[in-house]
Image 1 (cartoon, rainbow, N blue to C red):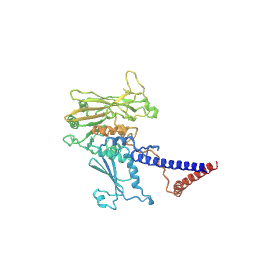
Image 2 (cartoon, rainbow, N blue to C red):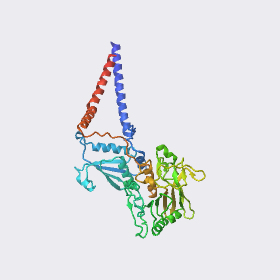
Image 3 (cartoon, rainbow, N blue to C red):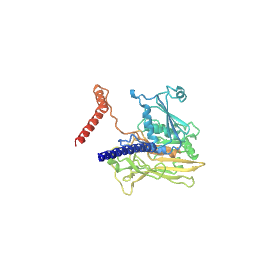
Image 4 (tube, one colour):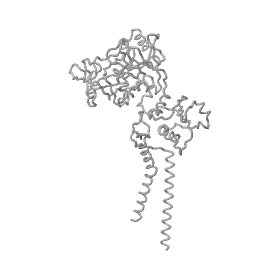
Length: 464
């Protein structure tokens, strides 16, 4: 009896010791989880963590980010969990940047605060950074929030000017060859546009961030060309996109910049791997320059031309190569009509220039107390509405604009939309039945199945 009693006491002591150790472990895990955070996302498109573009944006934001959400309190019984969803959404940003703070205000209980903040709808959110604020309304996702943070981070708020009146590709145009989609992306990142008429204006306005010359199709008048050159001589930044070696009245500007454009078109045999026309030049090699440093996305340049720039000690220009295309292709010396289909060409030794071919240069010099920057690309198609979504074309274009605007910190891979596939259930009787079955399966059948499986496993072990 004494032995059995002693054995029971030992077992009881062991059970209590196990319980105490278990409780201590739970407390320790709770404490560690409050002090340290670790997350791993196993969804197809990493829906629960930020894309690298968003992480890069947060890294260059030094100050506090204050997020104020004007939303009524959650009513879980009626399926209203907006506040909880916002906490989960902001937590993804807080994991990358600790000094992001979120605060909720109920506009029904504090209407004066909502009115003073200019809030108009339930769920409207005000984001504040560096004493600047922006509003965002639901529904929104990572791309919208990160674009908002980019706008708040932007230091240069001067407008992007663009030349018009000579058949240029317009930054707000909707035709296939226009740059309207690119313009929309720039607007979402805080850029504004101006369209000076150089036939009337005395000069190119000096209060713009840059002047975009997007492939004129007819000659720019001598008066306008002189104003553009004067603007550059005075330290103005320029993005010049060229469709061919015809400078359309801007030869004097090219001479001042030391720019030469080849008469031939780039042919890329690698295009055959993608079932594309050989006039599609692919790039994955980039120069060591702030625009392209650490840029590893493939870009596509239809009907590209070689561009070369000459450094000038007299004018102080420093030239950097940006984009090399067609490492397996060449620069075709025979003139190829733009838009030609079913192209049949071959490399002529001694006549054609073997790839890779450089199609973009960046010029930079010190002008007065500020720097001056110019980018010349021997291709405008890559930013056209037809091709802007190909590979990294959009990212490269925005990098170029950020560099020209002097916002070097914002040169980053942009946040991309999530690619997970959404399941849409049609609003029919059959669709409603499917929705009812799916909802109740997860609400009742799955938990009941797990309970029965556990019970059977317990019973089997008890009999063993």
